[in-house]
Length: 436
Image (cartoon, rainbow, N blue to C red; front, side):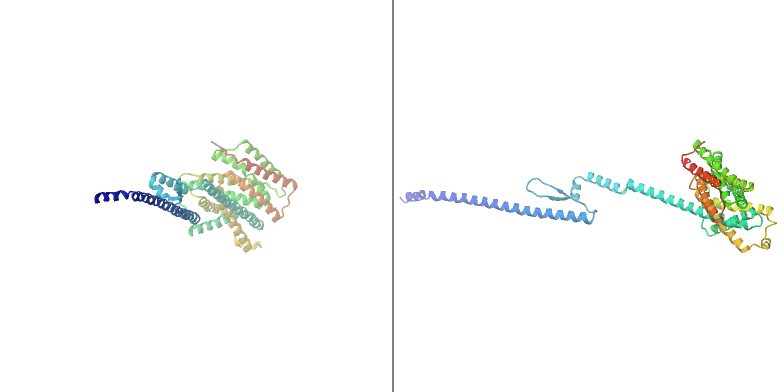
């Protein structure tokens, strides 16, 4: 009975078991809801942290871009979904693709090291502008020294009771030789080491230089300075002739045609010149021939490829010293007996003033001749001759104004025609001459 009652009692406890199951289900539901709530909170926290990371990365990007370009740039990588922007650096990417990244960096470095075409062109243009400015400064100095030389030299030649072209030439070349020896002694320019073959080539140039100077002084002493330089404006004619003979440069027909107004203008100016005489005329023509022969042959020496060839300064210096040595015997033979300081003082001349002007003329003579060789080393013989003819214009105008030389309209027309032909010649000579 008792057992049956116990069993009955157990049977009556069935409903509470069902209640426990419901409680477990509710507990599981509550835990699931809590889990969902916690996952949402975690997602919210991670979202806020990721947003903070993205803001920090963006601020670092802005700081790096404004402060320096040498740091590695941060490359953002976007992930689909709710995940925000995650910053990844180039160092992380290079771990995955090292070869491609290193190749790109090497190419970028090579490109950065190479100068751009604009910089190279600008450097070339600046070098060309500097060379042009230097050449222009040399030409201006050449013109000024030539003007003062002609003025001082003409004053000395007018003061002498009789013409002494050999003595004046020897004095000018001797003064230049003293300057040259001082330059070598002070080591302002290296001393040239000449061979016998080089001296044999330079000796004819020195003789032509000396005789050209003698004939120039002879013409300046006989006629007006403006007329001498009008005759010497015909130098392009001798340049074309000598360049074809020595250098094998043959001009075009247009260049030959430009010589017609030069020759015609010189002839017209000679016919109407007040101070015209044949000694002054032929002396100037001989000076043209000798000086242009010296210029053309000097160009061959300056452009020589053989070892030991001299530069323009030493070539002119050696020519000047040799010219002085050659002028001394001619001076003694032609004028040595007449010329002495005592004789010049007995004629009533101011010897001190005469020597000062002669020294200034010698200094200007040596200066413009040296600059002439410096210009000749930078340009062709024809271009040098054209610049020399432009120099004639400046010298003619300055001498006419200084000495108040009378000029007739026809004489001015002839001079203008000759100088106009020189300008036309310089424009047409830009084309490269034919060589044989």
